[in-house]
Length: 352
Image 1 (cartoon, rainbow, N blue to C red):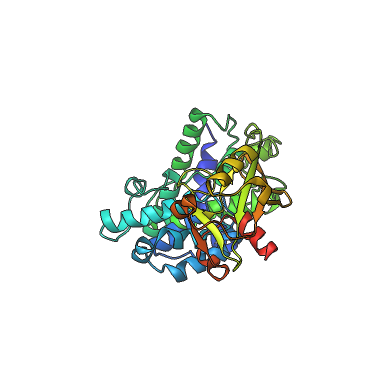
Image 2: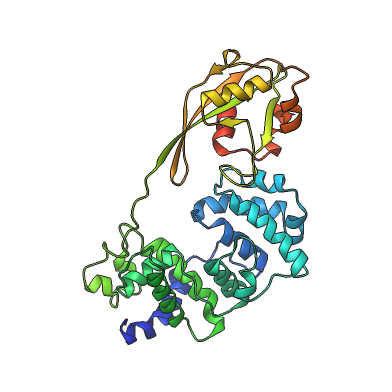
């Protein structure tokens, strides 16, 4: 068990530190639950500096949940382009429609209700409930786990459900008694983990918990929390079939909702030259019609894509049924309106 005095001191110290040293000018630090929810989804797996660029554009395009729910999915994915983890954008759109359809356009105010929204898990729901509604709910993202493991010398397997249950119980025991303190407390947890109790080179001398931190007392700051076992990165070949007309229009189709670049517009992708040949044959082309571009390396979480563009620069047969059925010609001037995978957008900018 963590020292009782440390548990009692944790929330008051954190709140006082956040009020003096924490971040106070982030654009999503508002009482509006829509703005809070949008920021929390964007901040999943993404740095604050990156979200600062995307958040204002999203708010300008979709100023409220009704506007987001009514928007076409393509418009949402287009604005999300480059932010990665595109399932978040699809879930964001679906959740907005849930709020409109199931909650009369008003965000639910309790964590269990918020967890009913697509793409909202326990920690995200707790953050929204704490920031927007002052609910006494604990969060437990990667930064918070690191703070708790160090301050309270919690040692365990990061992949273990039992250890995560222990951390959840600890997080709940630390909550301040007053609902009015929840926004500062929750922001303080995020700020402390992101700016002071960092994964490497933590700024222990600037930490409000320095004198009670059990990992520091035990000289285990570098050891805790224990790192997850490294996941092997699979190298996957991918071939892009880049079909362009004489007027510069590009043939695109919408990818399946699940899988790499789900729901985005893309040139046809196949994993082998044999499948490229089969696809091209259905369109009245053959591999000899294509010129090979330089290979593009693109890293996903646990995969490294080695992409080879195969480019055809002449008009396809008018009776090509696969082209008519599966996609559409997109003029160069209209590409910005289509949500494209980041490496494809960069490649097209390069060849233009």
